[in-house]
Image 1: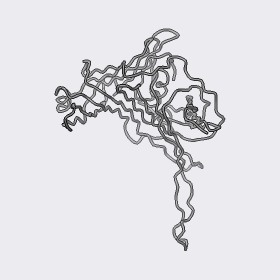
Image 2 (image 1 turned 30 degrees about the horizontal axis):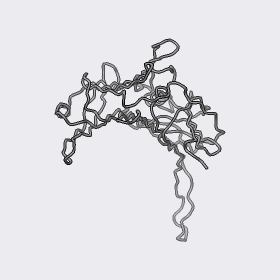
Image 3 (image 1 turned 90 degrees about the vertical axis):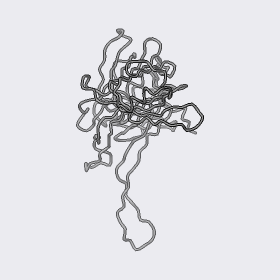
Image 4 (image 1 turned 180 degrees about the horizontal axis):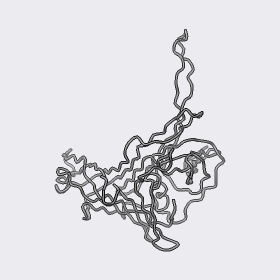
Length: 317
């Protein structure tokens, strides 16, 4: 009998893409669906019978999502992988550190655009599954009332194997995730109390590329498009200010700030935010809200479209 509650997820930083490393850090999760899929191809059509012929196994592709409550320790691994760049400074010597994550301007390596990790997933079935060469292709950070800051990481990986499970050891502090009750939002430099839910999504647009290299696993990961930062959410329709900003395509600074005790904090800073959809309607008698979408544009002054600052006890991801 296998139970999800008895499983665990661990990870470790790789120095060379696809070279597996034993898990060194572990984190609590809500769900995961990392899986190996195998491409298939036919080798015959004309065989003098109606019965389907055998096919042949092709390229192995590994992908899936990991969903978890973003606590001040665990979220840093995923921010580093999805953005590719981390700069740090000391807030309180030996205890508290400031880590700033921005989209990278160079690839991590010739065969991998962003920093890779090895993931270990134990599903309470004797052994663990180990996924080497794992990168965060897409990361969504969602916040709404009665919820933690819910992170959903879309993972691509190079190879999968079955290993003897390691001994999981979870962080002792801080363990409480960022949550709705400490969230505050600024639009255009002023605090707003109209936002009822928001999701910030970072997307690298990565693909696994198979090669003719005597292997069925992907040979490299490549970008198929630009780095993208998107924002969506729900806004109470109580005045026309933001609607006018949508009509005029006004660029505004957008900030999402969350904190925890002992100065742990997370700040999402978008210097050039503009609405892309702002559908106004009256679906019925109920209170009116707007489901909006927006884009984070590149800011020449800071050389970035988005910066995420994390204040935590860990200095190196």
